[in-house]
Length: 165
Image (spheres, rainbow, N blue to C red):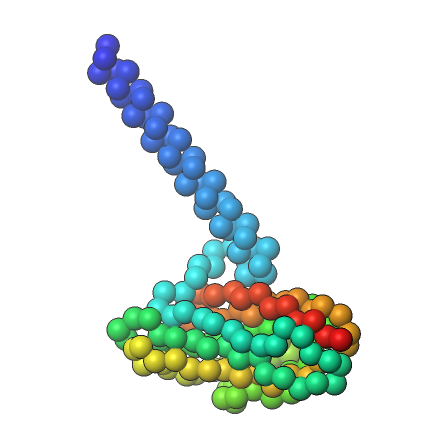
């Protein structure tokens, strides 16, 4: 009888553990979905991301929004795409990008985002800065996301908030 109780307790613990993992996975899937990534996307292995930009600018001011990607593994990683999403684009215009993207797909009027494609391989331990030269176009607090993708379409999402006076 003691053996049966131990099996039942072990089975219950395993069930609770699996239920906890299912809840964790559901929460992660929901957070990815609400970030605009859709289900199934996972953060990329092999790089870390940092972004810099001013917290406050005046209407008409030009400023840089810089995304720095650092390779954290022992082989090259590629930055495939960086997307900028609304409503950030409702108050901020991207005037130029450095390095120059290989392609730009502007879906702002239809879907609220612009895709910038790159083919930059970053050596192990090195970083690459992607600088978006912007102009503040309308007063307000503009919040949006930057989605940074590798070729497998795994992504890292960063939230941006700029106060335009």
